[in-house]
Image 1 (cartoon, rainbow, N blue to C red):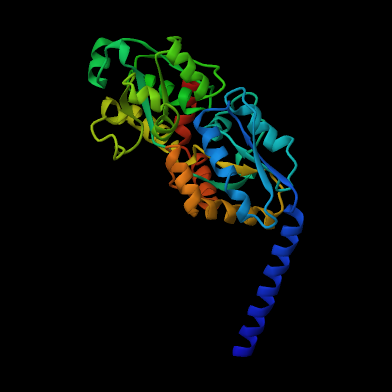
Image 2 (image 1 turned 120 degrees about the vertical axis):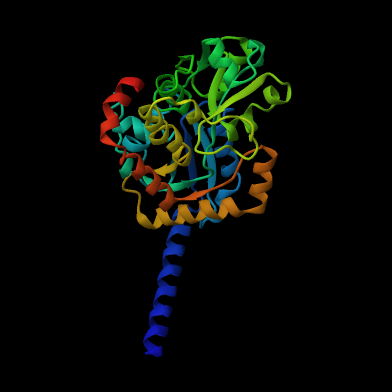
Length: 338
């Protein structure tokens, strides 16, 4: 019996070595692209460029990794590209807003992908969404905002992005006094619009605010008034959670089912359908090794990036949960997010 197990172990080791050698031969001298569905300078771009500087050393053959920005239609152009155009050869990695998965379920026009057919590499963090508005408005708390009923213009990237979907759901669920001005190419361009006075706030991940809106926070230009999660972020203990303002059970259901489930799947890294399974596993392992790499973590800390990673299997499970949404909520959501 021992001899049988020993033989199996030897064969398995030889097979793994052969696969690793084959992939090293494939990736050697190659360039891997990370296709980011937003403009340069935002959170999605910053995470990707930081990852790209370190992940190549964990891929057999040590390929070069570059970032290409493909903004437009609220990340949809890049997501469709990854599904329909990018070759399934393990050389193209997509990074777009995970809210598009819900939009597929709701039948958003223009979606040309099936979310569950992507190969999932992982996510660098679970986002914690919050709403920030300009302090120049003179509104210092959510309670004050609701009492004043001041309508605040929020910058949006497009349907499927938390910048748009969360405020729209909260407008219905808790009467949030907002107007979403959509069509920006990413939160970096929303920030430019905020600083010019074109918009007065944005719904964004706290992780992204910390990394790419640092000047606005340090210079006391931004007030964080609401959190969009089941419990407060440790760094924001005094900022109220949105569900506390819901007055109906339907409102609470909408918040729990949609708003509070966005964070875990917000920043997926994916491969095109049909990518060879051995390359999927190589890239999944390389991604997780990067998330543990001391040099990467130091680089991420300098950029104020939160690292709380999900592996590919866990990320895929989270995406499948999106498609388990209560069917009774679908007609209402289609109307809210159309």
